[in-house]
Image (cartoon, rainbow, N blue to C red; front, side, top):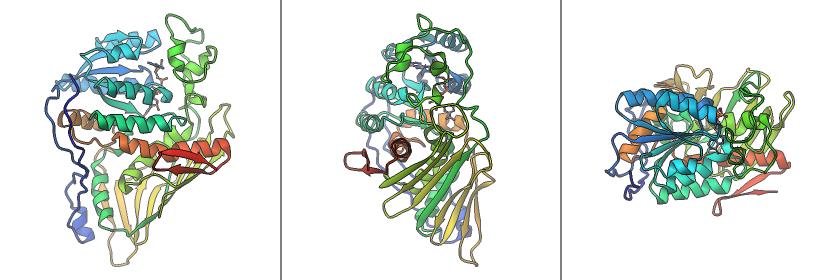
Length: 419
Ligand SMILES: NC(=O)c1ccc[n+]([C@@H]2O[C@H](COP(=O)([O-])OP(=O)(O)OC[C@H]3O[C@@H](n4cnc5c(N)ncnc54)[C@H](O)[C@@H]3O)[C@@H](O)[C@H]2O)c1
């Protein structure tokens, strides 16, 4: 499928008319963002997968289901590690590639799913949009050192009219659209403070298994491609299989976990870029390079001040709460989201409103939305321009923590400055 012709991403804000708490609760699902449709999309697009590790298993499960329904084909799989790509090909019947650039040159691939280590997301997504593919790219949009690449990807995706869905599945819930409309109407006044977090006991997510301790760089394992633009270091079996523990390939809890709790808040508030970010935390419990405790404070111009918090030592968490001058929006936490979004007014005579979740944290829902948008050319739930702005405070928090400085943002140049 060739790149389709231009569609204008017409960003129109939906404004409801409900004037009371009760009426607001019954609002229909709004279409917050719209775009003019363009035709020509293949109604059974061919999917190419890049990176066939743990996360790709979930994507393959979902896409096999959609394939059964006649909604897509799985045409190609790619990995630098032969055992994984062969296992994926055996499951799907897809063609094998060992180099993602060759997969991108394959005309039967209409869209790609990128689930490689963080550092490859932006370079591979950029190459994919330039090859005319639509892209589902796993979170985080980029490695913490790649703010420039994030901005370039955003510009290129818009210029080439490619659909890019960033894999933050917690935004794939229609409840947010209803809450967004109510926030726009001022239901809790001006939102001035936000708290959110992600808490776990154990570093099991990062300390990934080493399936073959004797694995070596060579024909079955392309170490050079694994490194990409990361510093050239000799082969190391832990770096290859447990890349989340190392700064060269990952950013710790900020970009691995907090991104999930922050993205829905970001979409609800339509934030821009923060003016000032402070990153704290440290590596206090587990033997690893990246932190196991992470706190970020991001101040947006005129508010809100967003406090993001994480510990991998204890799962006693904090709820996500958006505090306004006339009330609060309570999202719960990612493991305990409750029945829905609670809108808690300050005024005594006002009732609390609960907007039920429709599919909290459901990756299949994010895929469904992606496949729909590939057809309709509409704006997906988690588009790249949001991804780049979500990435900013996370990257800034990491840089602030690493350098012991305050991170500021130059919005015109989309550059991070450390002072
Ligand atoms: N949305 C979510 O909830 C969620 C959950 C888990 C993982 N993820 C994201 O998915 C990504 C992958 O995580 P994972 O746990 O599957 O890691 P993983 O190590 O299990 O899988 C990554 C795969 O990419 C391959 N690879 C490395 N460099 C490559 C290259 N240049 N070209 C092609 N293949 C390459 C590796 O060999 C490996 O098989 C991460 O960025 C992670 O943040 C998201």
